[in-house]
Length: 512
Image 1 (spheres, rainbow, N blue to C red):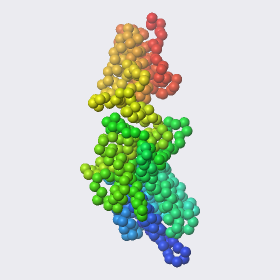
Image 2: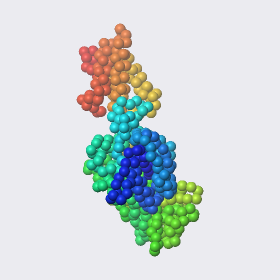
Image 3: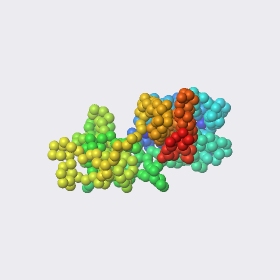
């Protein structure tokens, strides 16, 4: 999950802060100190994260494009210049452009906005931007929410009391709400000093950038691993009382299965699994690769000096073309597999399935799977000519149902024309007319296609006005009755739009 650091370099960031009466610092110096602390932590514990640095005032500038070189990021911080007024909207437009050019609109991204809480002045200020949200055209929309999934973290080089003296905190909270609400506003506690800014950035690190360490078990074998990026808690919407479910720090491999049997399953997230190699004097994280290790000598050579089950597992899955089913928690499973990102390098990956005992229907319940040796006959056959999957349901489902499906416009047109043909032959085709009419009505209600019901009602009224003088009197009554019933159903009123309700012919003096 890439990170964009958005640094405020407006004039308000140059306001002096007295530190114990010894030396005067600017708020910008405190911000740089906090970001240096963040970059040093990521370089040691989160070094696979791609990070970009942007600066903004009334305009924005990309100082460092997405990189894993944290020395380059820290060097850019030391060379920041001061500019004019604050314009958060322009900066957010810049973030949107930079992220979409590099990652597209599907990749989740984290945005760390570092500012002193000043909203700017006049047109272009955050206050003005939020006040004019509803008076904008499509060509000048506010950049939030971003077109890609995002979490916004606002780091204020100010304490809460200072922000609450004005409407700054209210505007920042509205900014967070517009971004989707996934994020947080951090403020400094106590006086503005180095210790306070370290505490604030420490909270951000603990919340977002703390590494996820776990132990991977398989029988009597185990290995310490780091999962990157950190797995997010999952909340199931269909539960009566939704509770966030977190991945356990004890990952248990419950079995192995061929890639062809698991195919391409739906997953909620994908993660890199890295072996943690421990030596006497050094504790570092290895790369998890099985091939050439010269590109990252320190970490990967660590992993290669002592036997490591994670490296053994990765190589075995790659050679055998299999995946390992791993239990993440109570009735929650995922899979471990080898994924190549180049011709010479591959990584051990972990994908998380939806929580539940049966995440992949074609495999059945994961707890019901067992070793081939326990089966009476080889489920794959003596020559691997068959497969036990997909698991057949105990009760055979019947698909022999007359279900109306409109894949193309021509199919819908045919059904409407059939109703009109029968309408012109009333009252002889009364039963067929209402049968076809009710079939179309049910399909339209199932799809929520209210406009179709009203449209067909208008056609029937038109047919009624075009009846010849020689037409049977009952035809006009039936057409008007059917049109009225369709219009009532198109309103969505439960009294007339019930799915199981059928429109019945109108009883007249002319009907038998």
